[in-house]
Image (tube, rainbow, N blue to C red; front, side):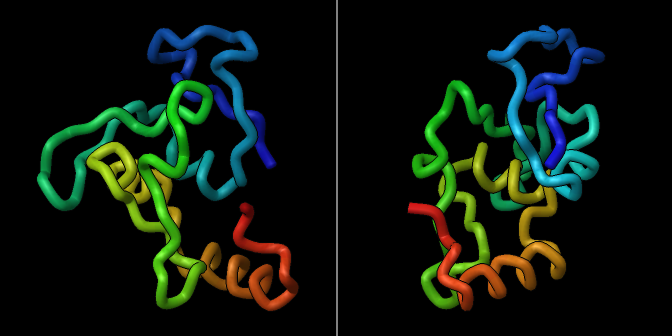
Length: 107
């Protein structure tokens, strides 16, 4: 896991606990210094999900068919899934393995 600046310092984000979260290395490297991304559905530019200020379940859900794929429920959720490449092959493989072990998804 990486300790990530939710709003990058290079974009004016503070260097305090309210702007830090844990992120897997793949998501953190995909995000880089992004603070927004296009919503693939509307093509509008949206701010990325802020895990300290927003509620995960309001913006994301597990795809019912496989429970490994993360689906954006809102423009923010869809933009974040796209920006962080949350459903790349490696992430889906890891989540499916965790499902088999009974470790996933979190409640």
